[in-house]
Image 1 (cartoon, rainbow, N blue to C red):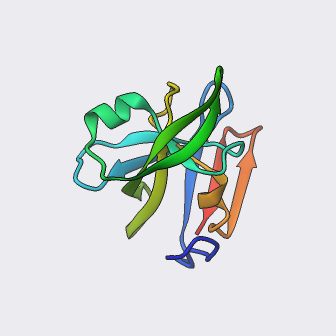
Image 2: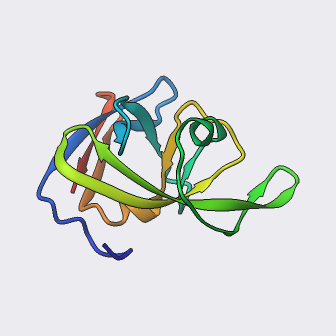
Length: 135
């Protein structure tokens, strides 16, 4: 699937908001049995994985020529192929290029706007503590 095209799965899933109000999904990386959390990061274009995740899950690095701004300036980071399932979206494997961020977050995966732009809708219900993702 090329970037910029919609998923067109005609499926929806619900996610939760953590104690900070950050929307997150339960995902399972291909080859793993464990469900982990992936935060929806509307302030990030590229999706990312934290250092702990990279130390636990062997991902294929495809490039090292991506730079992100960190506290002390620009830092070059790796780009990896990530394949995962989203709980509630049956029978579909999502494939996403992610960066290996040097930062640590509560959630092991951060889903950026590049991914969200391929969804049909992203609706957050702050007063009810959940969100809906339409694929």
